[in-house]
Amino acid sequence: MSQIIACKTKNEIILAADSKAVEIDAQGHLAEYSIKRLFQLTRHTAIITGGSMQGAKMCESLQDFIGQEQLEAIEDVYNATLPFLASEYEQYMRKACEFLPLDPIHQVYFILAGYSAASQMNPFQLYLIWTKKKLPQIDGDEISTAYSAPRLFTLEYQLNQHCRKNDPLSEIVPLIRKHLEKQSAVNDDIAGPFSVASITPDGFRELSD
Image (cartoon, rainbow, N blue to C red):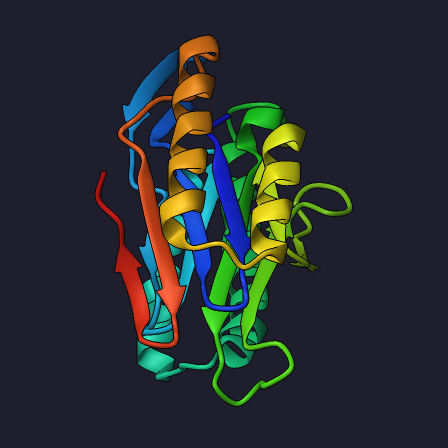
């Protein structure tokens, strides 16, 4: 399934993801991969993807598209991302279901994150993009403070507490890494290496261990 995590304080956004993916081939066999799930789109926006490894390929295509369109603000990137990913996902589902029945393993979900200097009331924005209705339809919802997929309610509660107090990265990032390591120890669907990044008014930055 994979694991993705996102939260925001008044000063920054923090994104995290594992790297495991499972794919079913045309013969119905399972294969495991280590993939990149965190992608920078612009100086101030990024996206993480969970679920099927096809999500990573869709993010790579989205990177190219956003670059060609020369978009920057999170509002503009979100408005372009939603229809783009919906179209990409529909194409993927048509191809996948030519030889395999519809299955939860085909599902993908994303968290789009970004900063907009023009939005003083809500400069840091997070959006969950997922199959909100029924496959293969994709829709989006804004995330208020913290979110994880699959849901880790204890972590989300702790992140909400930290974010509301506007705690620094030095307190939040170790908490996220701890939960990722804990999940990888008890869940075969989740594995490192883990990717963690922040978005501030200065831009996107990947965070090392």
